[in-house]
Length: 113
Length: 115
Figure 1: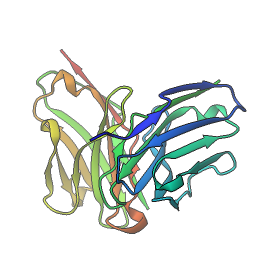
Figure 2 (figure 1 turned 60 degrees about the horizontal axis):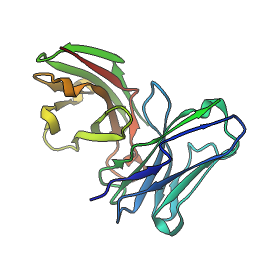
Figure 3 (figure 1 turned 90 degrees about the vertical axis):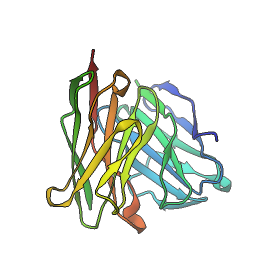
């Protein structure tokens, strides 16, 4: 069974530029999560989708971050414009449903210069 | 509200020695507790989880953890460290239902295994 796929794996941009990350969850998984992991910290939930609807985006900085999950499968997370403090690893996870174990992708390491 | 405190951001042990990684939690509802491992440039992998059944939980790769409600702890142990255990370990807490099911992670403990 294929795992959670993410791309790109690494991205370097300058501040004020925009960037987008892509996630393909495990087939059949209804719940999809985006986490931000800053160096030296644990992952912090940014947004949770159930199928193509948002369950919780309370910790998403909505002035610059946006996310969508069209058709309830793939998802994209966008940052526009990026700030230095957005440098982090962005992890995508999926689960069969919200009550089940989360499976994590390898992450996208973003460096903002 | 839920939170996790991992004591010791870095732990070093010799190969073959006992591994003990500490985790204390705070939760307003009966907690579910998890340990994840993260190898360099990889995502998180679930080691084990406590979901209100047996208080001693056995996981993969020889790890186990004991839920102690009186101490609000969920420490991770392994009797004998291997070089391959070198990684970062995260403790996480969630509630049993609804929005409380979301994971709240600790800040992680980097485990180094010395030859």
